[in-house]
Image (cartoon, helix red, strand yellow):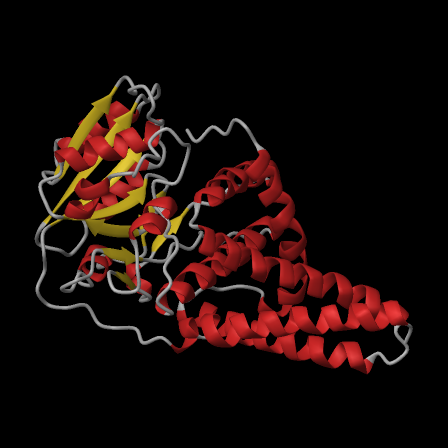
Length: 369
């Protein structure tokens, strides 16, 4: 090989080594984790849902929450400036759902975003110390969702992180969305299991009211998004955060049905990443860059290097390592995917993620709701 090829091969091998270190030291935590049974001492909990123009989704969620097998809970829906039939839906459910409380918001204070203000209003109105969050376009996978999530609040635990898959549909977009969701879950759940929690998803997470009252949104009230992942990034640590992996603890979300809507959603989600702690941004960037460089150099070197085995064998080791962990993680979380298509999804995600992330980080105006 020429000197440039030797240099690129060294970079290629280094990128694979970095990926393998993440696989074995962090990602492996998820498929090897134990799924604990819920404790038998139920604690009162307030379930909070910030809703804006959700007349189509709320009936499904509220019906499911009404059927939850848990003795001590209330459901608080914050109607945030809706101009559809959300108020009517809440009024009708209030007639036969005694645990439902509603709050109506007509204005947002200066230097606050709509969703953060709605969550703050809901927390202020809550009756219990434990706060469990989800979104209106979701529904629990079982009647034990509340029990599974809240039973993990042991002594010293302030934050509980759950998983929220997307509902299945027979489309390529849906397969990719569910691949990306499992990939995200693998990242934040395995990091939390490794003692390095850095984010959670507002569709399925819980924390103590005292934690919020202590610091709130920590000066992030005016920023779009981050009511979930930035909150966890600010307050979670290896001692006060716990992960729940049981299927009954999951909250299913309704996915986007168009590529344009999905792209807009991802830009919205990734836009808050620039406010993560520096160590978390660096760690995630290192893994993403190593994966991107590994794929690019794999394709390039495969075309120019005479000894193909020198490139194929190490990349095969990397791929076997990742796909094995990814598949076992999906099986643990009961996520059904076309696992035979993992190489294609992996390549597409590796290329699209930094592009969408760059758009999100440079966007000046992002509308959340």
